[in-house]
View 1: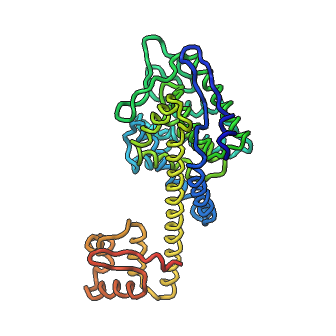
View 2 (view 1 turned 30 degrees about the horizontal axis):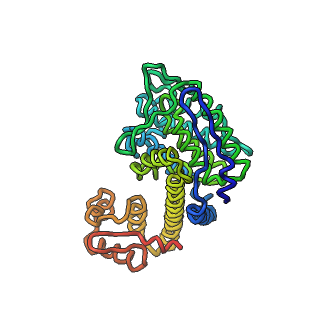
View 3 (view 1 turned 120 degrees about the horizontal axis):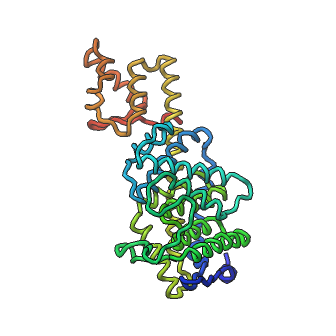
Length: 387
């Protein structure tokens, strides 16, 4: 990475009413070279894990968490559980606006994944309009038209941000300026692709400058995060690009503030104004990829543990009561309360005609076999036994 070569990619655009607008990488290579390597190392470990065995479950979890994250950032009211339930509904069952917001984001994700899977995909205005249309379709808004760029009348001013996150910003208002900047936006990104600027740098820049232009009346945050994810997905990163929405939600104040930090540094002609947001993004990718890797290992451990205890049942190492206890524990978040376990209807049904000694013996044998661990009133499955 050569800072001088990167400066040659700066693009200053003179607009009709907004004034000059500059696209620049604006990143100090010395500050991001190590974070970049950490992300790449994490990604290599992740894709070397047995993803094919857990792909369906992992994708469902990532989509639900990501849709919840990006929707909640923009004021969505559904919980993560309600989001997952909504995503499983048939189209004709979608009635409420909150549900529509969720399925719209999923539709945008699906289109982005389809596009990113096409060899040679390039970011262009048609794709951006298509994503916006998917996200805002059938959602009420006094001015927004799905896929149509904003053109503010003189009586209506668009502002972005608030005082708590670095101040309010007035993006371009005139439709001619918005169209011009969006055209240069995609052309500038293409110049970065040609110059082999890493996708881990390009993607957050796509996100940052999109939000600074703020081209639509509604849905800009959701669109910006999908564009960022599509650039990463097209570059070969799996699952993590869309899971970044949850990272942004978890670090919401920093996320919102950094847009203004970078904008103000650029206004002051800082040499590397965008470094803070790029560094934030890279740390997010590292964290998200490692979380996904841990989740893959956990899912695999559960699958292997299930096979292990089935084999133990078949060989009569454990009895059917013990097998039932273990399979039920697989469905519960660890650790489980022994008291709640004993009060569960299914557990009580196992011992209707048996005494307390049998209950205690069953648990003791499971512990001696190394299949469970018990401490105080808590019980864990010993998933290490799966390996």
